[in-house]
Amino acid sequence: MKSFGIHLGWAIEGAIGSNMKIDASYLSPHVNISSRLEAATKQYGVMMLISGEVVKHIKSDLLERCRKIDRVTVKGSKSPIEMWTYDVVDPFVPPKYGFEEFDGIYDSPCAQYADYKTRFEQGIECYIGGNWDEAISKLRDCKQENPHDKPCQVILDYMEENQDALGSWPGYRELTEK
Image 1 (tube, rainbow, N blue to C red):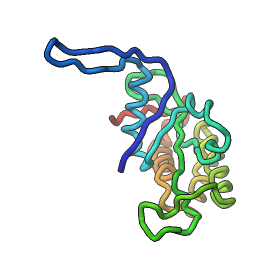
Image 2 (cartoon, rainbow, N blue to C red):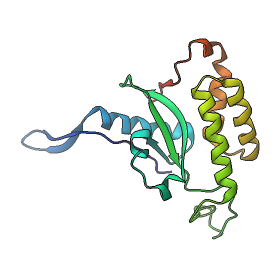
Image 3 (tube, helix red, strand yellow):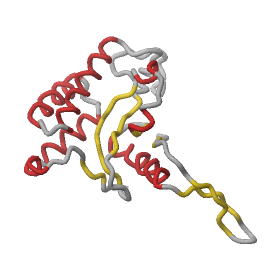
């Protein structure tokens, strides 16, 4: 599956190489963040991870398909970023085409998805805010409704494995996987 990490920020483009071979390269901490987001798509089981910086600039009709899924620091950065995904597939829409790669693709979100997204994001806000009991309750309800939602499972697993760290919870976690 193709995956994408999207972030917004400055970068310097330059030619790197020798007289025999030259490659274009981009240098910036923002390029690093995009790369880390792309790598994290596998951990979260999504096709696309988008930073909060990008989401600030997304038009409202696209924003209704974006879902905040975590707040993290990535390797090489000390500042936490919000992580969002773009839900291409709506789990509440019956398949239209009969081909697995197109099943669930939708033109606009159905009401059930919109309600699910709202409840999921309420759970994420509780998680970020340190109210993990409430977050676990909300996200377990979401998981029961949509058992294939991997971001939901990732956050539930993290909270359950790190209950002892709640007292010193800064409102984000460090992504350590490349």
